[in-house]
Image (cartoon, rainbow, N blue to C red; front, side):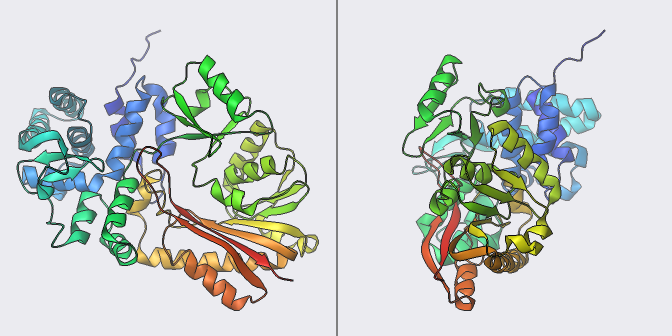
Amino acid sequence: MTLTPPKSARQVAVMVLNKFSPRRRDAAQILHELLEQTEQSRSATDLVFGVIRNRSCIDMVITKVSGVPRRRMPAKLLNILRIGTYELLFCSETPEYAVINESGNQAAAIAGKKQTAFVNAVLRNIERSIAKRTASLADSDTQKTIPQSPDKGCEFKIELLQDPSRDLEDYLSNAFSLSAWLVSDWLRRFDKETTKKICFAANRRPSIFIRPNTLKTNLQDLAEEFRRENIDFETLPTESVIRLKSHCPVSKLSGFNEGLFAVQDISAARAVKILSPQPGWKVADICAAPGTKTTQMAELMNNTGEIIATDINPGRLDKLQENTQRLGVKIIKIAEYNQVFQNPSYKNSFDAVLLDVPCSNTGVLARRCEVRWCISKKSVSELAKKQAKLLQAAVPLLKPRARICYSTCSIQSEENEMVVRDFLSKNTDFKLEFESLILPCVGEIDHDGGYVALLTRDI
């Protein structure tokens, strides 16, 4: 039997980028299905998500340097060009000749000599237009430099970007592949430096954080397990998590199948900590899938009490069931969505409700990178209406003096403070106990952004 040789990271990345749809937000799913075809899973993953995060900036560079409008470029070659350009701009450790040669080989495999020559010519023009693949942002010309990190960038010999002192919105939108309306909203609400930090955080390569399952282990014992397996990591005791430095698939890590841990960003973990569900409580998790926060609550409750978990998308509840079983959680009962609100026995019966509502995901753009190509002002407004309805629908479920934790992974005020303020104006028996907006951060300890509000009933 002839074995099929493994594909390169670039080949797999092209396959994923040709198949994925921003509207379906399915890049991760497609990548997962194709990763077994390559021995370079880390590189393939970086290429896919790096191109998606920086796509409009990459397209701008290709167009300006080649002089060829995107609409005139052969569709079957576009993602080959995007990957090659991404590597030239953001992967300075990869030699230029390797980027250009491999891109040419890929073009040759699907097109004729003329198309291959076109790909080589565009990438060589980009290479010749670069002054320094890694330059200090402080010392380089801002209009000629594509930012890579808060202190470094790829400096060109030609101007590519608007002067930020004249039009900061246009500069940030083009440099970070973000919608102008979104950047405008951030500049209106935050100062210039804070907005720049948000943009850098939105385009970072996000860290992977591991939350020990306290029903089975603890931070120290899990860290020791990883050391025995020679996994590169660091512990963050103040957050009770482990941050991975190695990039092997999480499902292949020691302890995964045994349910010793879950993957959860440190900002996402805050909502459940603020809700602080106690052992013996009855809690409703209304937007539960895939179950990361649901199982986190069960751990804090020491697997005693009851959690009724549901989600408006029934197809996602399979993942919740899978995580519940893997982690050894016994107190989660999965319920049909409408029945949670219609079942008379659930009325006035819950000590707490967790509402981690569907949102625009503007706090997690680095991790859910396709989102930037889907969201709009209109979609944010529509989401805010749904969020308000969910919050109001939770009220009849609560016991007297019970609590609601309302959370999003958005940093838009329309989905956060405005929803909560509107709710409080209509429900005077509730008060705001706690509120926090976390902005995404890039740095030594990077993290996502989001919002949490704790609402308690006075009677």
